[in-house]
Length: 37
Image (cartoon, rainbow, N blue to C red; front, side):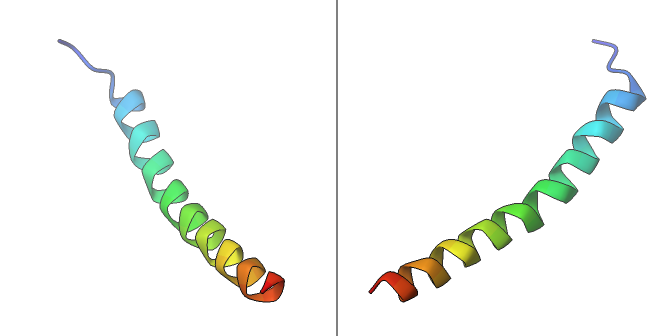
């Protein structure tokens, strides 16, 4: 199993960028739900 370093770096950056995106997405859903009610 020889995993290229570029793949690991891509995986790391993907995780770093996806977490804030998910938090923002969940935040927007909560705000929209509050407006609908």
